[in-house]
Length: 392
Picture 1 (cartoon, one colour):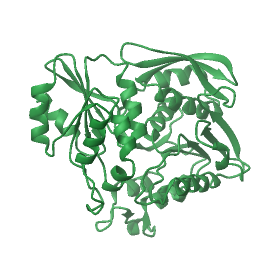
Picture 2 (picture 1 turned 120 degrees about the vertical axis):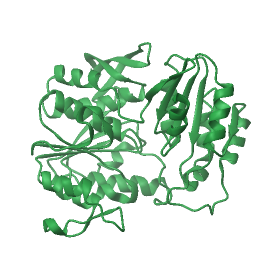
Picture 3 (picture 1 turned 90 degrees about the vertical axis):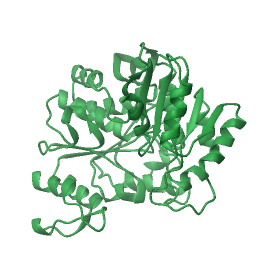
């Protein structure tokens, strides 16, 4: 297992980062997803966490529970998990916990025994044709499960039964509606930092009280899927509760970076409208005077196709500063810019400004942020540098 995981994490092909060279180990050239899928076949339990958003957090929650229960998991997560000092951990041969991304259908190369589907929304529309294409991909992901496998699925997903109606695997449900969810939550409350405590409902009946170490109501539902997975593995509630309470988040997921002039800086990876809403929902329960968002849109296609949704989500902030669109893998052929998003936000009667370079953004913030404000740098790439520079 050490050799396989070393190849996966370190031996990246020099001409194509999606390929790994493993010829020295006697393994043919594979994509990283294909190699990860092969590694999974050597584990008794391969737990894949998928969804448009929430994957990193939920993968980390499950990992923390397994670590707390001393079950020695192997872990592959899409963020830095402080308890393992990175994003991978080589453990025993019983449990492999992996974040499963739908982009380019990479998760269809995996070989799971348990799949978790958190949500299915429009994203990666430079690859997928539309939401129906995305849903079909997640259905194929479910069909990768063996007949003795387990699907854990959120009942808040539209027509959630579609994903498993042609399979014979075990199905465990969770969500906001206790009437159709085996796992749900009630009596949700917040502490002074927006972290939730809630009553865990099993088939509509209160079973326990759960306290989370991370803020936001969206993490209540992420934690429900983690609890469902842990209980499937017969982990006792004491370890489940301890694991969830000890998880304080991964890097770039509502990560507190520090304070300057009594202004708190949070950094967050959110780059999809639903993620932005979740982050700003967390901010509403966090100490603040005004909530500022400095947002860096990611890719022209996502910005153009979800323009109205981005404007609506960002309007939840008190003040919005937009950076230049980060092109990533694209070229600017769609005639879209952050100025268009700025106009949409202003039309919703929210304060918004577009500034196309980080130096001028920092100068603007130094001039306009005041004592007690909460400043969130938000986006998938390097917008965090703005906050880090302000803290210097």
